[in-house]
Image 1 (cartoon, rainbow, N blue to C red):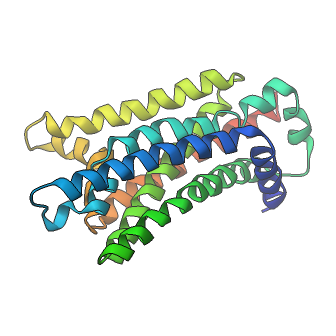
Image 2 (image 1 turned 45 degrees about the vertical axis):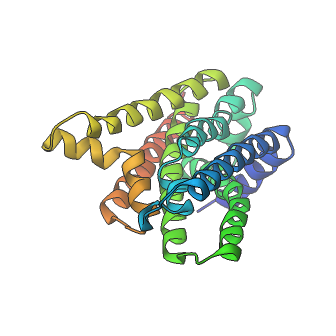
Length: 248
């Protein structure tokens, strides 16, 4: 795809030569460190711990810090993608370059997705610490990180679309948070509604339900399909929006 790699390199450079990515990485790892420490202390002092409530299962499936991290990290990474281009006036240069709208969108999206996944890499140290003190179920580890990647990929796609809808980074951030929070509230409905169609929908989009399953090693393909849909649909709309700018 024409220009995709060039856009990807350009976006990665702009992310990591500015303080943004480094500040987000520091805050993110601080939150995850607090979460991991809290989980380990809780599990070690609990009178009895079931098989499904070990440190990894609790860290990925029950920690509120993980949800908070996703609700803040993804909007912060994507808010500048197109909004900053509009504000700084570099959008015209980008649109006149020999690169397709799809390549622009995918290049920018893949850059923030790579950054997002890279920020999770240091948390593998937590797994190594647990491995040094006991037995680690590597299937649970893989499934948990797959769940984190799937949810994050969908949220980043939403953020990419929101950034294309405004020239203000703050507005893009707030719009993304609003969309994510809407999905989060809808997912909470699984604890409110009785079993039925509405309960099934709420449970299907619930972040807690997905991470709870994946943290126990249960990889539900329906949830991965939902995550993929949450990636494809916003990126498709974003590509159409960017393409329309060429004709304005």
